[in-house]
Length: 377
Image (cartoon, rainbow, N blue to C red):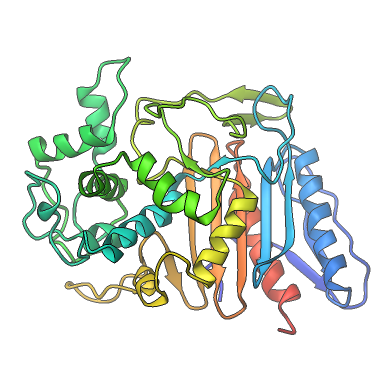
């Protein structure tokens, strides 16, 4: 059921009390759960484990585990920035990094629903001068366009030291440079942040609004996601009070991370959200409010590649048997979200401390939920 990337240890005993093993400075403590304990006690075990990780400077963030819309664990551990003056809460807004892509995918579907976009129409219908005749909107969403991930190279080549790359810049550079496609459109899966920046450009061109404004007015506000927004260096409101800022945790030292010239783009990232709002996001997928279930299902279709085989990437989701998930990493953000439709389960992990342990933490939480908390479901 789970596509685990690391070998991790989650121990479930049927007769022993919950115990957390001692650890050293180079490994995580094992997460041990008493499977005969009540559900409340099992989640308290996870809570205590996460608290221990935070105390050992191995986790600074928040975790949400919900079933059928009910939060079984929703708690933040740590501080909002390198100064450690404020504690994180369930309303703190974390940088989602590439988890933002699923929001961009929904924004495109909102425009499809309004009749402004067709998924299988070519991008050149929406972006004047777009150089690739057969690349469709769906190709961008599925990461099968063949367009190489070049926008970081654009920034290094064309920007002055004090300039910030914007969505419009990426579109113009694609038109002018016309980088050679890595594959024919639809032939192969190739993860490319550039695809999702171009999708943000389509949203701006079609809606006549900035990407930030469209997301606020058409998605976040209607859903009541009060602590979710697009934020980058070109945002008209440069700060918002609940933002968790990125830092590096180096032992007991915290080092501030500065934004870069790339932090003027969006679509591939730039969404910030809180644990409480991510619970609303879970509800959106389980009980669609703005889109029909049929249209939302487009996000989870696995495209057939013209070269051979099936890709497992939907619209900002990796799709495996029993689970849809996506991770994110940018600056200090380390993020993960997963849906388990059959179990009606939702897992969110957010960290703002450049956490090198995050993959093992995610895998431990996922396996603990599968092997213990859902064993009798």
